[in-house]
Image (cartoon, rainbow, N blue to C red; front, side, top):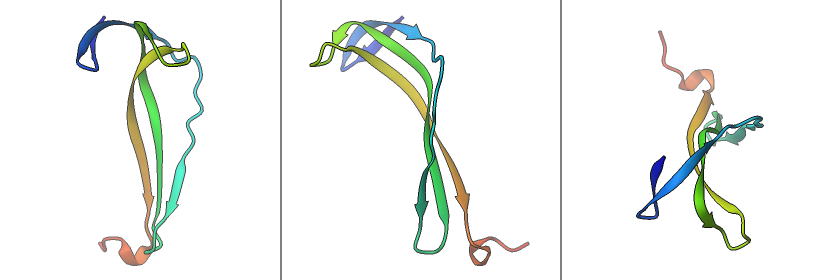
Length: 79
């Protein structure tokens, strides 16, 4: 499949995700709200004949952010 990589059209090959460990990042806000976020990879593609400074192949990763909000009762909409 052809993809745009740094302004250049390159060949990339899908690579299946066999296993994942997606951990939540948790933030306690000043107003007592707890916000949790995690990044979830949805698609991985290896770029053909492109490598980083250590010789590792380059990957294009499509992802989405998942969020969860737990606010104190006094901040929640009534009714």
